[in-house]
Length: 384
Image 1 (tube, helix red, strand yellow):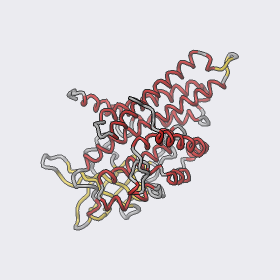
Image 2 (spheres, helix red, strand yellow):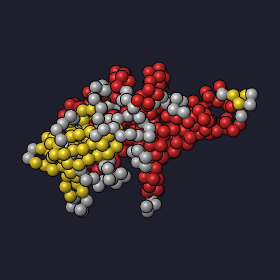
Image 3 (cartoon, rainbow, N blue to C red):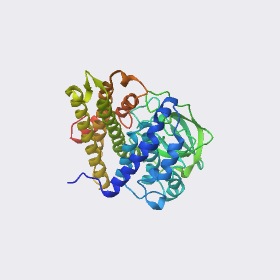
Image 4 (cartoon, rainbow, N blue to C red):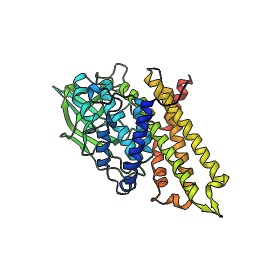
């Protein structure tokens, strides 16, 4: 068993690492402070082909795999989690459902522009009163002749209101099943569109440069052929999408955790106390050693999940474990890095303060830590 990256994957990692260091990092503090969406950075990411990494060349992609996407997300997160989640949301939640479940016509229409980063897509799943109960949406789509009429709202949606947003996949209740449960269907909504409105950006604790909004659909009409895949398959589609997304979120968490290690090592070499660098004291050195240990184990966890996914093997439990552990240690590392920096760690001019604010959402988004524990327990046969 060899956990070393292939030459191709390592070359990609180094390329994105350099881009993150030279392009993303210098403007990260500005975008965080002003809460501006990083259009110029996103444009350059599109030119590099990052939005097309896991898709075949036939659809305008780079012909890579999901691990390639995860490596890019990890390196971006070492510089700016807002940029990393923009890529993860655009690909994992925006483009991937179209590639996995869309018709050939839908793929040909949407994937080329999405892969180039000229357009962004979003996935409207969570609702204001729903949270984790995503399988019971109130948003409804009613077939009226040759059109679906959609009414409802979605909350916490990434990339839904940028100037580049051209498509939102909306999970809708389209009827009732024979067993009384709701029939759920994914419907593609091209935007801008009459009846579709992206509300103003949320005021968030972290991810300040990421676009996150509530969506409102009021008698929004789309053609009947806008269904993604088969009618009634929406629930299975979003479960599959979230399984894959958890691997990518794990990669993002690892990138943030590694950034906390990097910043702590640098600072502990430079900062002196009692006549010596603080890194020479075991209290600081051992704390940073534990941070690196946690990061390494979390990286191996998402590598394993990505490898299983690429091999076509079951990976649901491994994705849940990777997401749970990496998000937990990202929060731990952010807290410990802030402690290493002392009072300066509480100042927004230092990256660790941003990492601290950005870390917490990782334990919530794409399935809370409680949900991950539930999935792991069920996979072990426990009756929960």
